[in-house]
Amino acid sequence: MMPLNAEIREVRKDMLHLGSTVQEVLRSLYFYRSDYIMVALDKKERLLHKDQLVALLEQGRENATVEDMPGLALTAPISAKTAMEDIPPESGLIVFSDDGLYGTTFEAYREMKIREAAISLPEWWGIPLPLLYLKDGRVSLNEAALPLVPCGAQAIAGQIEKIKSEKLISIKDKKKEKVLSLSPLDAETFLIEDVSEDFDMVEDLVWWAAIGSAFVRRMEENGLTVRRMPPHGQTPQDAAEIIPCHWEGELIGRLAIEVPAQGGPDGAGPPAPDAGKDEKAQEAQKTEEEAEKTEKTDKEDRKPEAQEPKKGRRGAAKNT
Image (cartoon, rainbow, N blue to C red; front, side, top):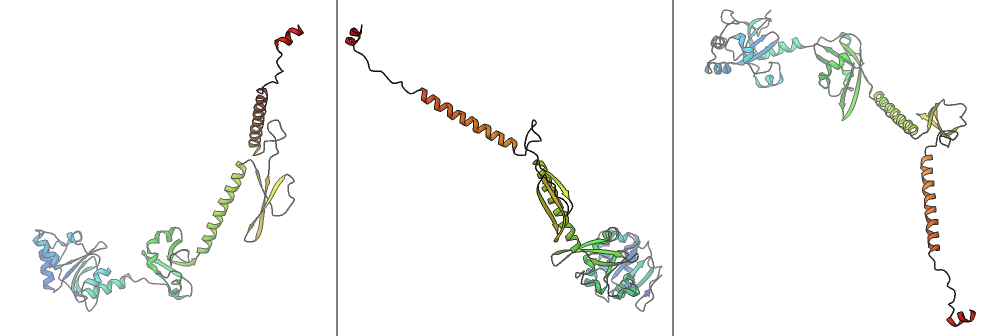
């Protein structure tokens, strides 16, 4: 249905229809003293200036029709910011849409589109609670929500799917990541809550849990036994050390560290973690001592024996 407004005037349908050619469209534009034609079909809006239509004639595309124009136009919807800045508000416009055929001005058409796009907010929208309203792919925030989302609804417009599925979004506020939880009040309205501190605490818990797990695993790899114990109770006699575990000043449990008994396969228990290292060191020391002893013995064997004084021939003969 054609909108009723003082700025709206009817256009003769025998002059302009889906099968009208570029030349016929130009004739209608000059007849109604309009600069633009808006073709709005199947929820798509395409805007063409009369100079663009003249260019189509010069290109030999005079047989193109109104139905073809959505594929020929290169401009954005007329309600876009660039169009609002570039086109004078008093410019004449012929609108060919699913609702009808009429002439108007650009300003009147833009205001009409803005009214159509306006979101009908709930009556209780002004309550002092941070609310988000989501409808037809558009996001609105009430005044109480602005301190939580100081950059406005545009900051979360790209996270609509996360709002619907996860009820959780993240934004940047003063170079800091902020996590917001969205609790649905109805199908389109959500209560906003800042849960950034809760998420930081969860990350902290996960980090310390990973550290504790790695610590215990390394001790077990070194041959120690680690047992979890309640905060209070009897201490095992075979525990080499008891480590108290605190969280935010509260004792939540203890770790008992047990060292295996010394020995090997023939001993009373499994070898201690450093038993192998000690045996190798003792063996090396023993080998070194034996080498030193052997070397000392060899030196003593190489010393010259004490020589007795030589007897002369005369003495020998005499003795004989």
